[in-house]
Length: 181
Image (cartoon, rainbow, N blue to C red; front, side, top):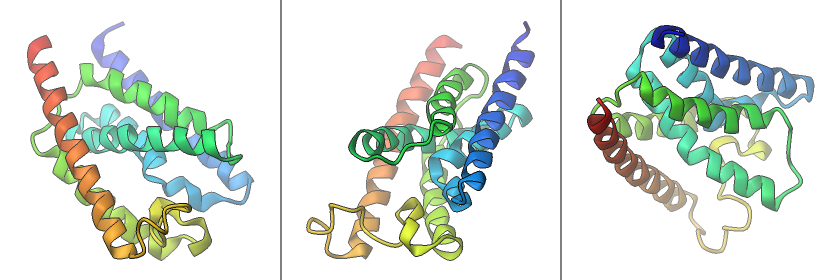
């Protein structure tokens, strides 16, 4: 199979993973959970791969690399689990890493991913119910309230950690890609 077909197949698979989980969330009456950054990361990795949009692909890649470990932590510490979420998280991150073969990481894509998270938090606050706390857009994560009595500083901390993590990952990925090309 040619690289083009592999890239298109990977992109289509990522979109299918997103759509399957989205359908399960709609069926469960929890449609608003589909805009968590990790789910959208899976979708935009797919769109980026299908359409050769490296900036979009990179944002999805970064969102998944941060979202998947947090999702795993949530799965291990709560009883809130949907089998289809495995597709958008585990399947999504596998496709995102595989996609590094096809899409070069653009410079400063870490900044775009961080800015995108900030915008997504704002949008989540506008369109999702407060009790769902999608993308932590309303409150400090349950159990962290004592450490962060101010929601504002909590968001500043989250975006700072995201920016630093994305920056380090950006440098690492671009060095790796320079060596293999």
